Image (cartoon, rainbow, N blue to C red; front, side, top):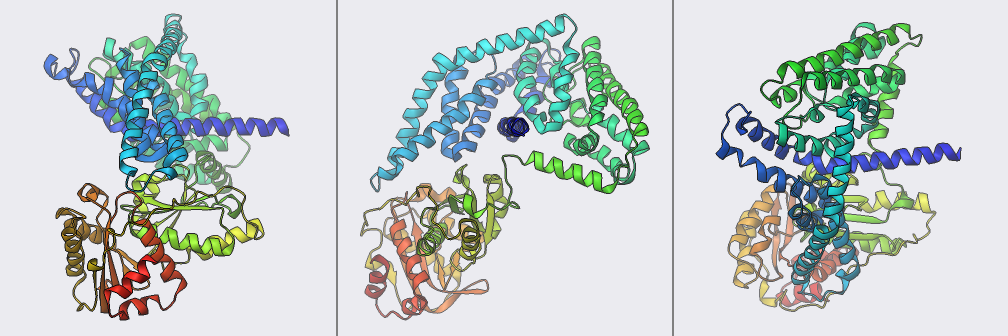
Length: 629
């Protein structure tokens, strides 16, 4: 039992690692394609040889692609900030090497993100108010410089040594004509969803070095060859049964023409014996490439026949087509024999079970918005909006207050911009119109989408879950409490509060709020346009009669200082089908404005008559006192 458990744990860790590795490469496939096209067109053996234009491909493979990989790795660990430090760190590896430093980027990118995350965890709370931007910029720069030196002196030489060892091993296999044996590892690895990790993490760096010297490399086509999977699916088309046979023709199109190899994995999981068809097919494909001197000039991703042909250099079409065809024939013949000899019925249930297994395997270490974090596991909840400035801050504050009252005070609840959602976020609450961006920014988290940040049932959903799991006991993980900021009276002046205003359009009201911020020297004039732009994207109405118009994430450079203004409309302003009586214009640098927003959220949450009090207040002083106390 223990041995099985340990084997399962090892398998899970390998799959998580492979998925993380491929996650650094897959978002940057466009850069690989751009480099491949430039190379295929303009190198001496290309379609349009041009020594001058061919120079454009060199910086791409030497600097651009490794830096993109490093940024993606650092960002996966710690958002944009982690990505920047990861890229800075990787520059040191690149500068000390004459070969493309993909492996170095895959090491230094995540490591740089992890280092800056640890720094922020240790010092972020002790940064004085108003100095956040200064400290954040200098800490990223200094730490990045230190890591770049470390990478140049230590990591670079180690990676070059490993690369030389790996390359020597590969050259030995080629020399003794044993390179086809790699399929014994590659084909089962693909079924375990290590296909992208194998292709882009191992074969692509070797292939690029070969391509630079010889104009092509067979390593680009070892994993990407669609032949083995095509043969298996064709066998199911003819000799399969039930749902497997019925779905196979569609799978052929998706696999062979679309390049989505994962489509045939459930068929193999349903009959693992079919690996005996894939492995020989892969070996025959590699042997054909080696024998006929085939190969691609750059990675074929996705592994579609169209991508394979697009990356085929002159003189290699016959070899590559032969490799795909022979691999397909071999897998088809063996798979057909296995299917015809099989006594088990390929029923709908068996295919669905295999697809379920595949989905479970693919999601190991990575939850989706459809998965639910159990109450006992909840440690970190993030409220996210476009700029992380207003609505998310108030939503987080309101939920934090409710949790404390319920006794769940050991759960960290913070807010941020969508692009800055931390990698360890378990539950992300965001506006329903930001759903696609939120899921893309944090695929590992459970997502809850709301229409209003204050009026929603997020607390009810999570509190019930926590009570069932923890039996009303407080969780024992230390909470990440928000820092206590010294209130700066310049953020909200009495002169920034306007009462008794006539009802107008929301656009006019937002412009009015923006102009107050401009006149108060909080923002540049461009910030008003950013406020209107933000409103068009997602409504800033947060519930309970309150709207908090503010600029989008791109407008942060237009903010000079943190500031708030408050506009009272006793008769209300329409925000779609909602009515807002209080508009709070926001411009925030760092966390300076969060104290006031927290007070507002608390007041609205604890006092059902708060909006009535605010919209009926006769003087600016009354509203000012309520907001800053």
